[in-house]
Length: 106
Image (cartoon, rainbow, N blue to C red):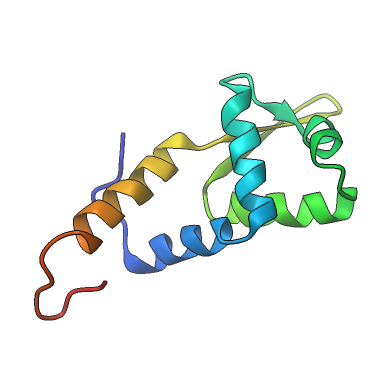
C-alpha cells in the first residue's frame, strides 16, 4: 500500500539515495532477487565492491526506507521495500505531473 501523505523531505531523501549509480544498482539487484531477498555477501559478490563500500550504500538505502534488513543467525538478508518505492512513484505522479499551480513543489 502506498503512502498518500509522503512529504517533500521524504521524497527528496529517497531520490537522493537512488541518485547514486551503485545504490540504484543495489536496489535493482534486490528487486530481481524476489521476496526471499539476498544476503549482503551475495550482493557484494555480484557488484565486486569492498564490504565497507557496500555497507555504506546499504545504510543509505535503509535510512531512506528503500531497503529492509533481517538478521538470521550470521546472515544479513536485504530486501527492497516496494511499498516505499511505490509511495515515491505515487508522490511524483501526484505532485510533479499535474498542471503547475501556485505554490507547487515541482
